Amino acid sequence: MLLSKAWQIILVALALSMGTVAYGQPSDSLQTSLATNLNYADSFVYLVNAGTSGGNVCANVYALDSNQEMISCQAFLVTPNALKSLSVTNDFHTTAAPHPITIKILVSAPGVGNTCNAATNPTLATLQPGLRSWMVTFSTPSPTGGTENVFQTSTPAASDVNTLVNECAFIEA
View 1: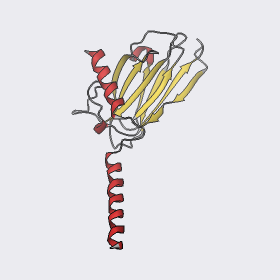
View 2: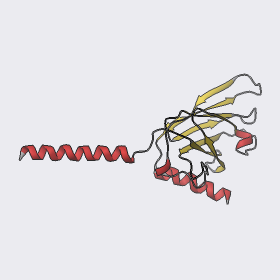
View 3: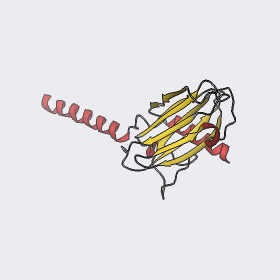
View 4: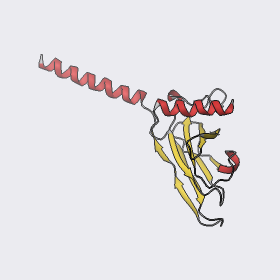
């Protein structure tokens, strides 16, 4: 009886660990950074697909103002080992403002035909690992003196994904 009880415990532990791996989200599929001093100069976002997902990824980028309201959302297809460069002011259609803008990125698999849409594509089931992101911001009007910051990565909850996708769909409607 003791042996069968031990096997039961081992099998339950194995089943639970397999479930976590199978349904767990990539730990870098939500990335966040801050664009500051936009009244002095534009900030720039750089995206690289490290290729760990095994193919193309969508960088679904959401810009939020200092009141946490979404002001822009865009989606970009990034192929393995490719670099995508973005201007915060031009690519996110923001006006230069002294207030910081929070940039959030959800990394997902592309849809049919390698399409990306920040308002519909990202779901918990489509999140992918492997995007490396960093931002360069400036503290003065001088083109030298930029500060490079790596985006902070995290594992998103369903509420994070749903909020970003739904707010994007609302502002694009």
